Amino acid sequence: MQDKIRELTNEIEGYQVSNNDELEAYRLKFISRKGVMGELFAGLKDVPNEDKKAMGQALNVLKNEAQDKFKELITSLEESTAGAKSHDHPDLTLPPVPDQLGTIHPLSKTQQRIIEIFEQIGFSVAEGPEIEDDFHNFSALNFPENHPAREMQDTFFIEKNPDMVLRTHTSSVQVRVMETTKPPLRKIMPGRVYRNEAISARAHCFFHQVEGIYIAENVSFVDLKQTLYHFAKEMFGQQSKVRFRPSYFPFTEVSAEMDVSCGLNEPGTCEICGGRKNVCKGTGWVEICGAGMIDPQVLENCGIDPEKYTGFAFGMGVERIAMLKYNIEDLRLFSENDIRFLRQFTPMG
Ligand code: DAH
Image (cartoon, rainbow, N blue to C red; front, side, top):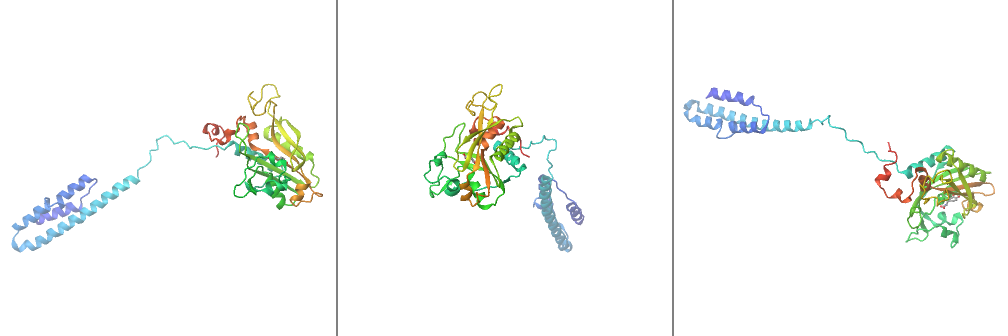
């Protein structure tokens, strides 16, 4: 029996399992009552009396060893299967998953380009709030209360506070800049504006503008014309044609609007409306900008001495410019998030 015990001790010590079946085989052989242990304990009765005690003790030691080993085998099997999972390498032969790059929205691209052009000639960017008070959106810009000029802009009012509106133009930021900055100053003010208008291919209830002001001593209408002409050439190419028409804004005197040629009057059809003429209305010109010399009263309203300083201002529509630049016919495309439309613009990155 002693030999048998020694033999089993060695076997237990060296036992290895690599899967659950082998573990079960070990259990049946060394742990289960029907295994070798059962047989050995049963054989104790044939051991001579004087050896019985020692042999019984030896058997108990063997039984404990078998049980300790069983626990050890369970843990090592668990560790090896977990380890195998974490070393599971990705299959490097699989084809790569392509990166899904987004594109830059045409309005962002256009606005960025407008900013770039003006920054190159010394303008810097300023911003203001979209929810604006009556003073900054209207009064300071010479729209007195009940003045018919306010009708030019269909305003969204804030219900709980009739003094507050969604700004109808970025000219409100002009006022804020003039209030806080001493001339000479050159600023552009990009942003979203809101008007209570029916949505169509040519109009929307929100759109984007870039406002600009230049205030210093001896600024004249010539400076305004040259600045905007320079802008048009940079934006649409050196061959671009522009025209200025007299206009009216309460906050400028004199006032003008600038149109850019859409190509209709060149040989062939209108580049942007493709003959349908829905953007240029068949005139061959698209208005992109209102402008003028800042009314001395407005300078005074904002704390700038009109005897000393003069200035020009302009406000351009980002959508209009993007439509001209990218031959887009319908304003609604900018806000409908149609992925087929957006994908046509260059990816970011
Ligand atoms: N605020 C005008 C509008 O939304 C555009 C404009 C016209 C801005 C003339 C100006 C300007 O700064 O001088 O229709």
